[in-house]
Amino acid sequence: MQAVKHIVAVASGKGGVGKSTTAVNLALAAQAAGLRVGLLDADIYGPSIGMMLGVDPAQRPAPAGDNKLAPVVAHGLQTMSMAYLVSDKTPMAWRGPMAGGALQLLEQVAWQNLDLLVVDMPPGTGDIQLTLSQKARLAGAVVVTTPQDIALLDARKAIEMFNKVAVPVLGIVENMAVHHCSACGHAEAIFGQAGGAQVAADYAVPLLGQLPLDIALRSAGDSGAPLLISQPHHPAVASYAAIAEQLREALAQAASELPEIVVE
Ligand code: ADP
Image 1 (cartoon, helix red, strand yellow):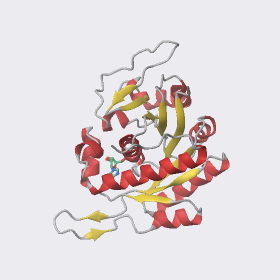
Image 2 (tube, helix red, strand yellow):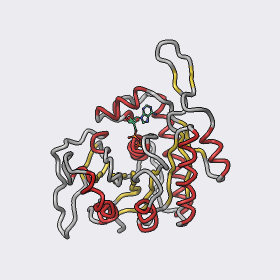
Image 3 (cartoon, protein in one colour):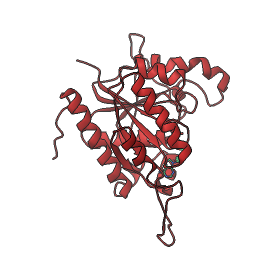
């Protein structure tokens, strides 16, 4: 039996657009839809999924024999992160040479029978990202961007990178799309409007969804209690569920081997 059926990268052209937030919530939404899901934090320079999932910073992965590490299970997800292996105080300069290790990390985890492994990629389109994209047996990639021009420019670069290495871009997630004032409800497109849709149209890939700029998403990430768990009725949760469903369909179409979702 294959330990991991499908690997999907969550990528962005630049940092700070909400890639990790999307990876975490998407992984949880796919799990809620009935898939067995893992999450690999390959963002070597800013590993954050442990924090976002409330993993105790002192926790270290257990050896699983055969030179492998057991994944750390958080909210049902099988997770692995470089942050579980190094301390907060490990300097950036030492992490650099470890960057190639993200791929090694992927292979050294004893993943247990996963339908889907979500990989939170390092931001950008440099050598590290290119190598990971080429070698990680990716079924596809999701590109996260904000509607801001500078982010869109970099999102285009990310799509071009995946095209170059023949990894299907499954779609674009536009994050921080609109902000609703919590006092008066006024909607404001702080980072601009419809940019994600334009890029999606230009490259003929789906716009999988748009997430608001919302304090609940930020505070859920910071507190280690992801929105899907802490506020399951928040409107953004439905958006993540819809994105996860599109992903599942795209993967099933590509491989026709994912299990059917059973609604009880
Ligand atoms: P990246 O992985 O692209 O660097 P993160 O997911 O770490 O980005 O997000 C950067 C910061 O923005 C985090 O503090 C996160 O909580 C916050 N954030 C991400 N998406 C949203 C959103 N839609 N609304 C509000 N805050 C967000």
